[in-house]
Image 1: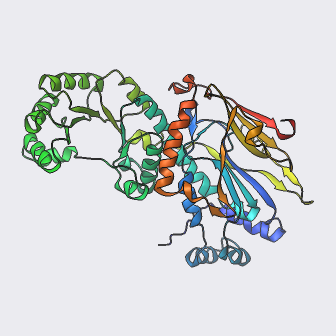
Image 2: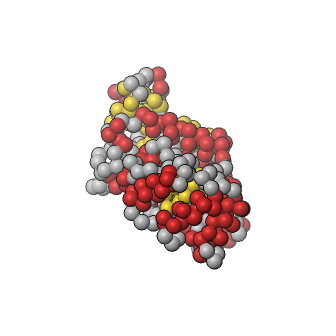
Image 3: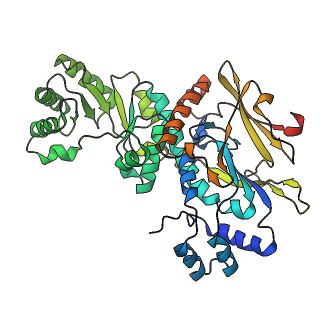
Length: 443
């Protein structure tokens, strides 16, 4: 199977390219922008996800023999367009928010500059990656905030498509989770992996004690035993009897978790297993995690909710043309004006203003023409948000691979500290900070 990512694309992108080659507009210099008009689910902030994956996919955005044959045989585009795509390489530039950065409505998350032919066919690829990964990252960050200092593990692979599961594990780790159950995510992205046994392990054996004894013999006493296959209290008693008071942990996957956790903690302490950790799973989301804050829980495992964006599986981002070269060679700012689906035209640069280290607004400067974009020195009380991601067609390598994942995780945990207190609440509300547009010639 081809490794090319070029057909991860909607047909209309190639038909637009075909028509632009015919009418001579294909080489007009253009600026496309990827942004979100609003935050999904009344959330108070969003988290940028997928940038590193997009850069890797961009390296493979090539039309090879198989892709060209499909386009030719299906008469998707003209022979002239097929010939153009045979040598296609993105040669433009992309700047944008770092992966793990926070975003708000109107934030210029990605800015793609190049010819129309260069940039238009990246729309679906960019949106499919960032919409999915940002939705997961935002949900995971909210869960991480709710968990506080208690560790989180991602274990939702069986609730997602196989490729989406790997991407989701990657984003959960960037947004604050400590480990994943997905081995491919561990291999590909360097994420710590975890896992011990499911209920089938206990059911396989003639008794719960036999199952626990075999697991301890295989994995050592620091393992975590799943104690709710039958009776929880009997399971806890058996676990400690088999592993001793040095048992690493027990896992609870059912029942009224606050009540059950309190009962299990009391039983463990009574048995002398005072250092044995309690991990809870069972359909957790950010709200359930927050509800367990006062319970004697040591760690959480989250599945379905994190890999599906906790009810919002897409971030709702769009990719719009905001500026182009006119027939006279000058810049023309363009925007969509449809009610509820409008966009802000013009080239942009973005800053986050801070007071005593706390974010106060998303400041977006808009240039309508050839005006130079703002420099950081012009906003000394703000943090610049955009970095170069692709320069003259070449992705910036530091944002890719396992090293890029670690850098994104560190960046996210650092910038999350800038959020005002009201942003940490889980209830629906307006964005935590406003987005303010400023004309470049007025700044």
